[in-house]
Amino acid sequence: MSLTTRAFGSSGIDTTAIGFGAWAIGGTWGEVTEVDAKATLNATLDAGVTFLDTADVYGDGRSERLIRDVLAIRSGPRPFVATKAGRRLDPHEAQGYTKDNLTAFVDRSRDNLGMDTLDLLQLHCPPTAVYYEPAVFRALDALVDEGKIARYGVSVEKVEEGLKAIDFPNVASVQIIYNMFRQRPAKLFLNEARRRGVAVIVRVPLASGMLTGKMTRETEFAQDDHRSFNRDGTAFDKGETFAGVPYDVALDAVDEIRALVPGDATMAQMALRWILMNEAVSVVIPGARRPDQAQANADADALAPLSPETMDKVRGIYEARIAPHVHHLW
Image (cartoon, rainbow, N blue to C red; front, side, top):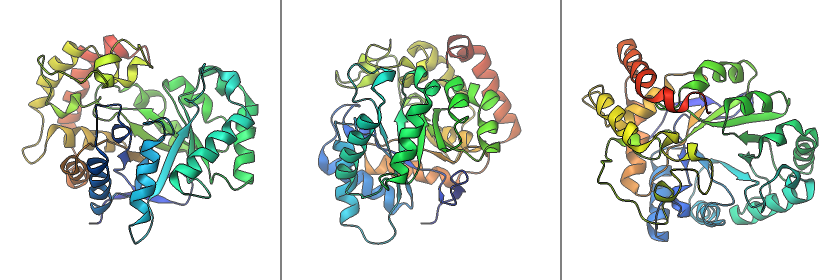
């Protein structure tokens, strides 16, 4: 299957506009068996997806190793694989982002992924102070010079962090949360990144599954699922869970969005299409735990553009219900 591709910033590389986020198969969304994880990865690649995003802390390297094992037995062109580093630091503080630590993290990911040179290394939502430390970015430049990474980017929590990061000229990409419940990046960041030739990777596109429209007030999550234990930011930034929107507030907004879903699509597919309406987005990385979810995500590529009326209505729902809770935070 041939999916729509977009330029990955000014790298000269094109990737599919719909990628794959490998957080869930690492095991932080409840248990995913190795068989199911590999089947999901294979379904993703069979659907034509050419961009995979992972991190060294997803399952303590499990996600990276699963990708390695699946790619090792597949033929044909290898997909672009992005990983992240930094969250292994304990405590997770800016002073830990040293050349020695970054080198150790990179070497571990190279081994986990079975790659001599990582396609893309991203700083994994580091403390804001990191963006004011040129030495960190010089260390990343050195890793490029050493051939351990081909390029580097950052994964950010806040729009302001993204704007500061792209002041460093060799930042190739910024990964940011952008979805129907998190619209501030479109106002302040996305066009500036595009103007500078920086790729934009969109994560949490379905607001931790909320924008699938399948959750209710009775939905229960496993104890090891971040949607159970991180709603208040207990383990990491609460914006990573349901995009930071209070659960009941999100459900009410979803009920309104449901009426806007095209007849030939699911709400999840509409949510992905909404993101891709912004041409500054290079790739969106929905996750999946099962092959059918992976295929459904890829099928969103064929969805027709949303009408101006639908876009306006989504904006209105956001401004009325969601923005008061999140717009000023991220």
